[in-house]
Image 1: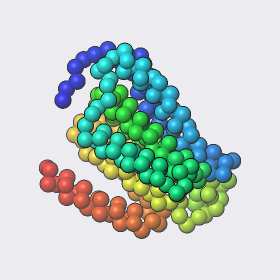
Image 2: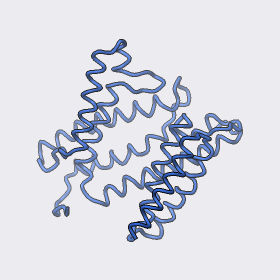
Image 3: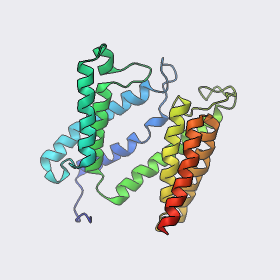
Length: 244
């Protein structure tokens, strides 16, 4: 579907750059806190989402074309949050179910922020280049997170978790979660690398993530993730050759 030409409102442009900023959340580490890899990321992310919500409501009120995209993913995500809300009301620990814990920073409150983020993301990023910029930000952050993980194999105090550890966890704080994060970005990079209209400069970026991300996943020593990566490469290769 081709979007008509329009002058993007300043508020929409501001929201778009705030969305780009959220892609950098994986790099946030509160080194002096009880949960250095999770607390800071979620608190800052939720704060940005709450600011974006105010801006988005003003944008929607002034320009109805920025209304939420009501489709199957929208209803699926909304249904999940509503079921989670019901589970929270009937929980044996409703306080913890609502707020989560300092270690993981989950809970119903955070998941509703994810839903609001999804609504704003799909309503504001209206062009292919908007999405490409957002995905490129994510890939750059994944590269930096992988490099940070490599530093955890050293004895440098700059890298939290360093000391020649056997399993790296990058800026995510958990080897399995870090591996999953890198897998997503490896296949994002692979998909964009194979696009016919991708520039040579961008292909270097994507090749860097594919290489460093794959190496980082192997260094997490998470067997499920390594197996998933291998199967993913095999299935992706099969799909690609069937399409060509």
